[in-house]
Structures are given as structure tokens and as C-alpha cells.
Length: 286
Image (cartoon, rainbow, N blue to C red; front, side, top):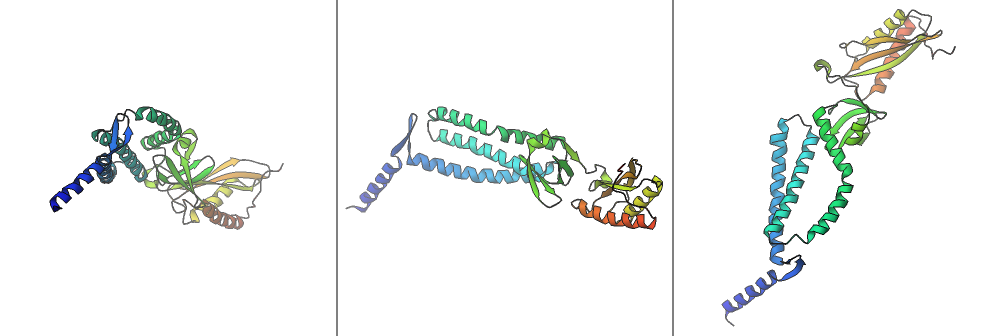
């Protein structure tokens, strides 16, 4: 047999295999050639969108004030959208009839939309958090009884690290619904500090000025307490046997260790009280 004829015969058989129509979709019957065409184009689309995502985050979003986590989330969201639209375009250019998928896509879309209500709510809330800026990464916040430092603000969730070094992931929509207390100071000179308040009870028969002087002496003696803003003591309540005071201090060293700061301040206050013969009190029992 002529080798050229044999080669031609093999190519003809391969062509028949590639163009064999085996999967009917609407008015179109998909062939292997169509599937290869779609797969190759989608492969290059995946590579192109990955590089575009990297450029979008590094070159464009890096010039904004958007947090790194939010930049990554925005890049991923945009890439997913482009991949979806690109895949539809590829199917259409391949000649595949998508009209038969309309009913199925509608049913799937309805189910997906119901399932994505929470996701969309969280994403919108994440955008609002970035635009309004009620807090940012590094801020000390209190939410729903939890106090911690904001570690990451993403498009869907915010991660808060507590004093026990436990990461709590909170949906952004829940943050916007609840009450948030931001303990971080916005002033430029103390933007990396936070204010803590500690209650102190002392003998109610002593002049408040004497007790306040002792508490301030203890606070100023602690190396982790900032001198500016200066510590302050407030006489909160008067009692027959005990007066209640509040010590307010700023610190940048003990942002995630308030319990340690309180313990060390208690030792210093104890020494300052003992030096002045001031007695502690558990409260007014009368």
C-alpha cells in the first residue's frame, strides 16, 4: 500500500473522530474539535486573568488606601467575573447554542441567588467598611463582648485577634449591624496606642486627692504607660466605706496584653498605697 495513501487514510480517520458530533446541546451537536477549542481558549483565559489580577492588585489597588486583604478579595472577585463572561463568549464563538441552557441556568441562578444573599450582604458591608473606615487593620475594637485587634479586613469577613491570641472571623454584615467600640486613638501622635480603663477602690475616709496622687504615681512609674496622653484618674463613686476610682492610661506596648498591664499596675498601686497607708476596699457594703 502506498505510504502516502496510508497517511491520508489515517488523517481522514482522525478528522472523522475530531468532528464526530456526540453531545447535543440545543440546536447544536458538540464535537470533539469544539471541546478542544473551548478547553484551549479557556486555558489561556485562566492564565491571562491570573496575570491581570496580579497587575491589578500590585499596580492599581496598591496606590489606594484599601487594605491588602480587601485588595486580594477585589482582585479575585473581578477575575471570577471575567472568567465567567469569557467562558460564555468562548462557548458562543465555538458555535455552541446556549439557548437550551437558559431554563436550566435560570433555575440554577435562582437557587444560587438565594444562597448568595448572605455573601452579597457581607461583600457590600465590606465595601462600606473600607469606604467609611470605622476601623482599620491594627485598631483595637470591641464587638459583641469581644475585645481584640483587627488583623485583617477582607471583602467578606473581618478577622479579630483577642487577648488570648485567638482569631475570630466575623462576617462584615454582622459588624455593621452591631455596635463597635474603637479603642484606638486617631490622633497622629498616638495612632498606634490604645486607652485602657481600670477600676480601683480605696478607703472612703481618705481625701480623694491623696488616693489619686498615689494611683497616678503608680501609673507614671510603669514603663509601658505613655506619658502623652498622660494618665488620668476619675473619682467615679463616693461611699461611706469605699470610694471608686477609674484609672485611664494609654499604651502602645500592651495592645494585646491588657491583663498583663493591669496586673503590673496593681502591683505598683499596691506599693504606692502601702507607702501612704491607704487601705484597699472591696466596695461600700452599707
